[in-house]
Image (tube, rainbow, N blue to C red):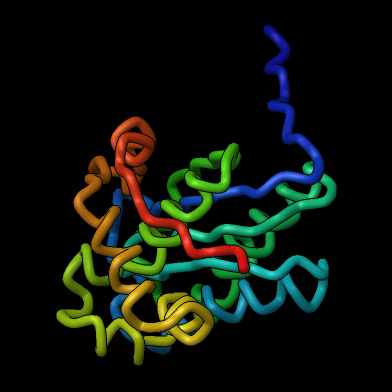
Length: 192
């Protein structure tokens, strides 16, 4: 049997993680179900000291962005999200399938512009998937980090950030086409 080489996850890097449910099944239709994932994001901060700076929790996938001083902690982050969510979900609900999660995709953020695009994409994901219909609903929804971006930079900037990237399509597994995302030009906030 051939040894499978483990990927290298660099230290001092920003990560964009997407997790998709098994067969893209909508396990997280209700707010109380989505709260299980949100609680795991909070646990990542409490137990590992790693804040999730952008997130979106949809009915069948999530997006999360975070900074890791030590890349090796990525496996711990995934374990808390996937393992923890599966444990709490199975204790409270009867899942349709034995598996909750099918796969995950991890992307390393390599530039400031890419960082902002991922923020806009993540913040607006519930709007993109029509789980909310307006920016006001998005701002009031606890399962998107849009509210925090709007509070920090203003509603207009947050809306424009989302509008600038929301046209990017995901594939059927919920993965972002980073090639399309990199081609989009956005106005970054002033650093003054």
